[in-house]
Length: 254
Ligand code: NAD
Image (cartoon, rainbow, N blue to C red):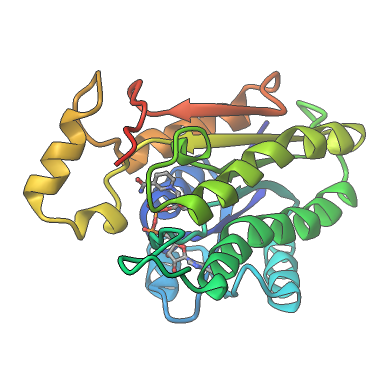
């Protein structure tokens, strides 16, 4: 697919994996719309790329509709990458054996899973209404972000694993449904990536996490994620699949 003159929307695009992806898409010629919270560095990040910042909470239908409309004004919307997410840990029971607040579980699932679905739904409508790409015949590609926690979640990750397992599970039915429009849907399940989320940990903790990766024994780089997004966009036969990007790590219980 030719990205020059095309529009690409990246949620969570002000930081980490999302910003690395926005940089790659911009370098490939796409007009990039960064969708992130108003409190994020979205304005500065978009300015660096000569792109657009559309402040939005991915769980809000009206805000996401406005962001998709902004992206569509920049050109035919061909690429949507869902990177917005949060990962606060919470066990089922606290130290005293009491149930932890249900609202925490609901909030995490709402942002990571419901938010991803909200963006997919609204972006798919805009893509379906566009003319197909003259070269590939594709109308667009949607890339979601799950996690290895979808498959081997650790203690303290029931909500995160549930949200990411949901992103993985809905990939195939949505790819099947959107096939008739020429829209592909692919999910990436990253392992432990070196983003602001992880860089907040002490260096010793980062090193220890990196050593758990069979090969290469280090944290993943945001640009390795972004590079895979670009390959998914380029490779028209990838569809309805979740790809682990994790150096072969299988997470231990804790
Ligand atoms: P990050 O914290 O650097 O970036 C996440 C971005 O999402 C932030 O800019 C944040 O403002 C935005 N965001 C959060 N809630 C939002 C909302 N409601 N609406 C809009 N934007 C919102 O984190 P990252 O490491 O780049 O993570 C990106 C994605 O990758 C997340 O879905 C995360 O769960 C997933 N992931 C990360 C890792 C890792 O090791 N870093 C591993 C597996 C999966």
